[in-house]
Structure formats: structure tokens, C-alpha cells
Length: 359
Image (cartoon, rainbow, N blue to C red):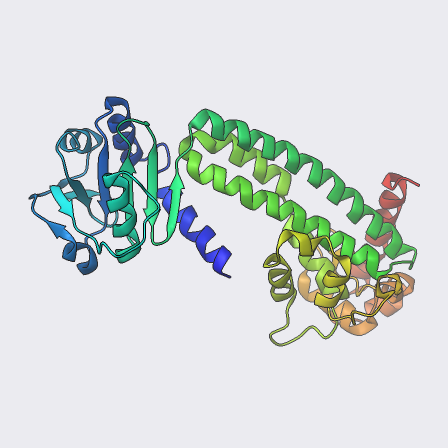
């Protein structure tokens, strides 16, 4: 939970200073001029307590205005939404007892002020030419856009490979479901591959946030590659998790798995345990029956309410597959026409899976 909170805080910071924003334009102007700068984004009571001197501006924010004011010594104070310049040439006087790993006066003041007020503070190095952001205990040095694009493209290539493997694993799971030959190993492996794809997505989202307008193509590529991935994972959990109901939903189970460190995702027995199965030796070899949610979702124009009724009536996919049209017709919300459509849809999807699945 702590890691997720820090990641969320970093995302907020990156979006605030992303390329394409007026604030980033102003920061880049200061960087190119090599004047250095110290900017505080926020005017809470905690911030005002550690500010001395300077003069009030209270003007609309412009990149040029920020650049000109940075020529003076002292910190520039912006409103919380970074839309107004409130003060300039101020001195930050944070608590000197707050530990700091920085050596320069500007960066040390920035780090201590951020820790004391939990406000975003930006320090621009005059000599090194880097922009460092601080918020609470978080410190992040903004990377060069070229480097970011290179890393983002590498991550997209990784995502492509992971998505390809995930699709093969899920296709194999479908084939085994039609053959009534699924084990917990197959289920855990499918959830593992979905989670690995989603973890790469989370990393790419960080790059996209920092890239701002420069990351539009990366965003489009990622969205195309990740389509339906999370839905597939939720449906696998819904098909196989034990005792689903109340607070225990597919989403909560997947969120639990998502909170694990990367090394735990590699342990398939832990995934099986998250689904509600015992952690005994050989549990992954246990034969399990899908409820049928994921396969039924493949049938076009089949409402979720009808899928729920089918699962409640028959219990497992294997029973739905052998049900007659008359038996399907007897389920609430299904008439004869829809019953035939379900039967035909299942047969077509089974043929498609068997054709595509490598033997």
C-alpha cells in the first residue's frame, strides 16, 4: 500500500510538470538560461510559515514571467494549481533539524521544505542543468525527453511480447476448458500472465505522465496492446475463485495479487491460494471446472444478466456446453432464438480455438 501511495504521488508530480504544460515551459526556459531556480507550488499555512521576505506578485502564471523572476535569488511561490505567481524573491526557512541528503543550499532547502509541508517543491540546478522535484519524502529527477522516449519504446516492445504470451496462455486455457481438462496450474498461469502485462502497463504509464504531450503515440500503442487484458483477468478469477460473494469479488482478489512484490507473482501456488484454494503440496495439479463467464463473454450480444442466469442455472461451463436448446430456452431471459444463438456461438468459438491452438 505504501508503494502504491508513493507511485500515485509521483504520477501527480509528473503530470504537473509534464511537457506541454505552461509550468514545464517555464522550467525549461530557466534550465536553458542556466540561472537556477527554486519554486514552491502551494500557499498553505504550512508553506507560509517557512517563508520570509520577498514581495507579493499575485499575477497570472506565464512561462516568461517565471523565467524573469527566477533571475533573482530566492524562491518563487505559485498557487496550488500553478495558475498564479503569488510571490518571488522569498527565502525558505524550513526546520534545519529535518534530515537532508542534498549538499547544495538550494536543493537542501527544497528537500526540507517539501518534507515539512508535503508540498511540491522544484529545484533547478544552475551548474548541473537538471530539474529535481520534491514532495513529502519523494524525490524525483526529471529525465531527458529523448531518454524517456527510448525507455518507453523499449517498454512497449516488452509489452508486445508479454501480450503475445498472455494471448497464447488464455487461448490454451480456452481449449482446456472445452476439453474439460483444466488444472489450477493453468488457471494460476493465466492470471500470472495477465498481471505481468498490467505491471508493464503501470511502468509505461509513468513514462507517459512524464512525457506529457510527447507521449501521445506511446499512449495509443499501449491502449491498443492492453485492450481487454484486465477484463480477461477478472473473468478468469470469476470462473475459478472459491466462495465469491459479499466483499470477496474478482476485483478485490485481483487487487490483492496486484499488491504483491514481483517475486511473489512467480509463485503460482500463491495465486492459487489467493483464489481460495489450500496451499497444500500438489494443489496446482488439481482438476477444476470453470463456471463459464469468460467463454460466454465471447458470444456477441449476450447480456451479462443472461450470462449470470446461465451460470446460476447450470453451475459449470461443461454443463452449459451439453445443454439442449430446450434446456437453454428454460433459463430466464433466454428464448428459443437466443438459445440457438448461444449454442451456435459456443460451437463457433470452440472451432476457432481448436484451429488456433497449437498442438
